[in-house]
Structure formats: structure tokens, C-alpha cells
Length: 420
Image 1 (tube, rainbow, N blue to C red):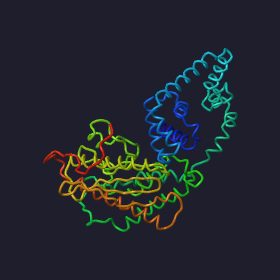
Image 2: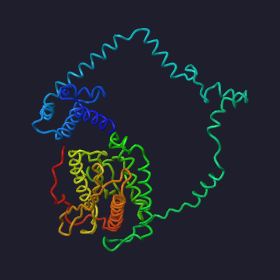
Image 3: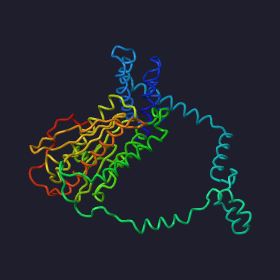
Image 4: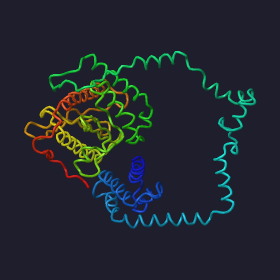
């Protein structure tokens, strides 16, 4: 994934920053092959098409750049073949030009890499130093003196603190199915909510102190860094100390969606974040999140919205295929992060079998120091996410696990067809 993202950004930036006369099918393909010489042809095609689709709408249809961009796909095959031919010719020439002297130089470098002593690096694990420790204690201590100064000493109290932690640890999570809750008739205690809010604010404070998202570096951060360093921490902070934690967890590894795989009958989609819960012998996905980088274009935002919609729809179908949570109560949560916007959705199946999609909140993400209202609105949206998720968990875990009634059909809410 990281390779694809890096290549996409390279091509996108080339298309955005280069003058018109430098943009050709050959120059674009060369951006990919120069970075990854053996990148597959079809993957290169899709990556370049996606970059063109993302950037072409920045220009008017009558502009020279727009007209040139839409011609590139028709010239891709010839350009790819030409660039790869030049790559192969260059590699062949390099092989022919390797002299005896170069071979000897490379062997010498290899030997130095394999033998620390030959490269004038003496390892504390080497035979010489081990022999010193046995036969010449003073010389050994002299050799080890710099690292001993670095190590220092750990306070004795730390061992007591660790022992106390292990001995007093109490897993207070529910071991059985919790009581059934309902929306509108249950709230966490104010003390618990304030505690969670404080944890979210601590996380925001850490984000504000992170120079990676300051004004100087923010634009250079990719999607993976944004998700890992900002979105995942605040979502996890909002879901701390769930009363049903022994059944549920947050997945942030872009794992394949079980619901999507079942619905599509082949490889499923891979959301950026999911909230998963084990119910009986099945695992359900109650929350999906799709995220962009810190600066998001319109195409990315629209594509992520379609993907999120489908994931939520698949999640609802999968839940009702395995059990029967109460209609007009249970819902699948969706989060879309588009640049610095945080959109919170919920999909609810009504008593009439019709799925209804609601946008609950659209708030700014306080990536950098900002005003009080922005911070409050973001924290309130995360607390709402937590509250809905807790009730949905209790509804799911108390639902009848058996399959009865008619076989679940797809959602009655229309959505764009799946891409193969």
C-alpha cells in the first residue's frame, strides 16, 4: 500500500507541477519506472489513470492541460513499452561495463559489510571483546565505559511499581452478555463521559505538539501518517474503557472486511479503520472509516464516500444474515475523514425493512491549535460515536443468533454498482 501511495503522489505532483510541454505519456510512465523499475504494467496503468482522473478537474475543459491529460490513456501502451525497453537497454549496458576493478571493489565492500573488524568496527559481541572480558578485565571495562555511561541506572522503585501493577491488575470487563440498552433511554454517567473527554483532549494536545502537522510540514504528510498519527488515536481515545471490551476491538491494519467479502463473493474491501465485535462464533463489523490525507481533492472525497456507503451497507447485510438485532434501533456507523472534515453517519434498518442513512455530524478536525468551539464540536462528535456504539453492541449481543425468517436480501437503499 505504501508503495502505491508514494507512486501515486509522485505522478500526481508531476502532473500538477510540470509545465505543459513536459507532460507526455512517456514522461509520466517514466515517473513510475524510474522509482519502481519492475512495477507491473496493469498496476502502472491504473495508478496513472487514477492520478489523471484526480487532477484533470482542476483545469477547465478547454484548457491545454486538460486536453493533453485526457489523451494520455490512449498512448499508455506504447509509452510503457518504450520506457521499459530503455530500462532494459540501460541494464544490459551496465552489465557489460562492469570491469575487473569494479568486481574487486564490490567484493571488498561486501567483505567489510560482513566482517565488522575488517571495516574498523569492533563489536562488543566479537570474539576479541569476549576474550577480553575473560582474560583482561581492566581493558574490557575501558572498552565498555562509553556505553555504561549511557545506560546509567534504573531506580529500584521502578521494579516495585511493575510488580504492583501485575499483582493488582483487575480485568473489570464484562465476561457475559451485558444488559440490553436502547437509544434515547441510556446515557453513561457524567463522570465516565468527562473522563473519556479528558482522554480525547489529552490526545488532541499531543497532536498539537507534533511538528509533523505544523504549518511547515503538514502538506507533505501522506494518508498513512494522517490516519496513524491523528485519526486512529482520537478514535481509540473515544472508545477507551468500553463496558463490553472483551468482545470488541478496533482494527487499523486495513484488513479485509468480512462483510464485504461475503457480499461480493470474492475479495472484500479494506476500510482504513473498523470496529469489530465477536458474537457467538461470528465476527461483525459495526463501524467503518475511510480517510484521505490532510489535503483532499473532490474526486478522492467522492470515491471514499461511495466506498464507505457500500461498506456500511455490507455490514448491515452481514449482521442481519447472522442475527436479528432490533430494527429502528440498531445501526452501522460510518466515518469519513475528508481533509480536515470529520463526517459521522449511521445506517439504520427500519421496521419496514428499508435502510435509512443519516448524517449525524460534520465537524472540523482540530489538527492544529484552534478555537474552543471547534474543539468542543469535535469532542462531542466522538462522544456521540461512543454512545451509539455502546448501545449497538448491547443490542447485537442480546439479539437472537439463530437464522430464521426469510433469507436476508441486500439493502433496499440504492447504491452504485460494485466495481469488479
